[in-house]
Amino acid sequence: MKYFLIPLFTICFYFSQAQNNSAEIYLNLKKLNVLGSVLYIGAHPDDENNTLLPYLAKENLYRTAYLSLTRGD
Image (cartoon, rainbow, N blue to C red; front, side):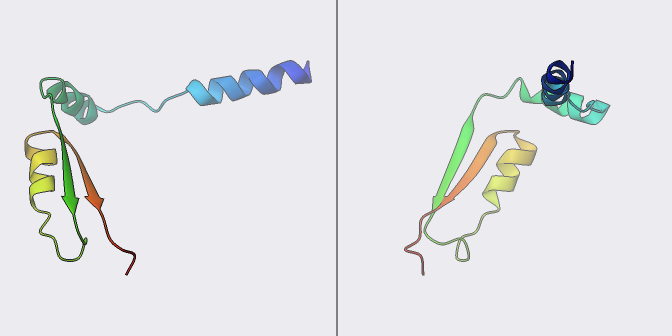
């Protein structure tokens, strides 16, 4: 019986999700109308002006990512 309950509880824990509140549901519904992603590539994260990414992510609801390519210095 013990060998049956452990996998059962593991599966139940894995598939359990937290309940979304109404603000998260509304934001997810608004994101359904937006099709697009933005990848911003920069040379060094300290030297770049990254105000475009929050604007695209928060105002226009695009999926955004920032890729920094440095030599490790």
